[in-house]
Image 1 (cartoon, chains in turn purple, yellow):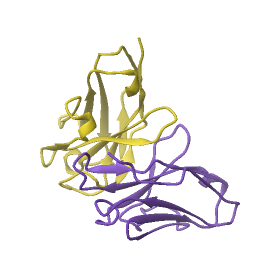
Image 2 (cartoon, rainbow over the protein chains, first blue to last red):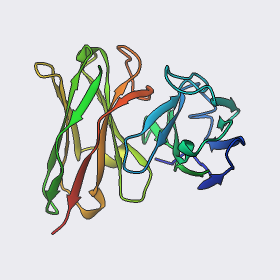
Image 3 (cartoon, chains in turn green, yellow):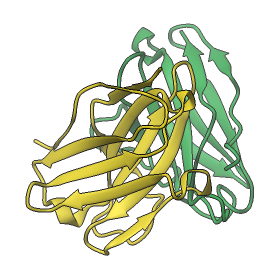
Length: 111
Length: 124
């Protein structure tokens, strides 16, 4: 399956805001609101941060927000903190015949 | 509390099969599907498939079709992932994860709880 396209890395200073993009097609991001975002620290399991494009699960800081425009979804982290340094992956349902689900390639956030 | 506890690390030879377990607790097992995801060393996340006990359905990506099998045992609230004809490319950490939505009938659901991961090493 073709992965969703994310930047390999982004960086920001403590207190700043950053945005990570995730570009797909009309078969996935553009066609449905089934985009979620996962945070993964080294050696740890992923953690759900955003689902249904912009919904924050209970327990996730309101510094994390999600949005979508056309075939591109975005994760914004405001008020960056050192603990936000991690890998971030987008994930979407897709109608692609090769796979029902597709992940982004991942973005390494350096704070 | 909700937990997914996976079986321990495995070392397999090329051509062999591996079966990883994922024991769920803290919720009604049949009400939530289970997705399997793997991560090769230094690489990103890869979707391996989904199973719903409630709907008696599975879904696999084409690139693993015929080589991966997902099953569940409701008596022990355990999900299993079996991968056959292993090659060195299958060396990875394998994760199980729970569907957020109750009784969702298709793959692609957000994944709210994850197992701790199981390292499978394929080496001759």
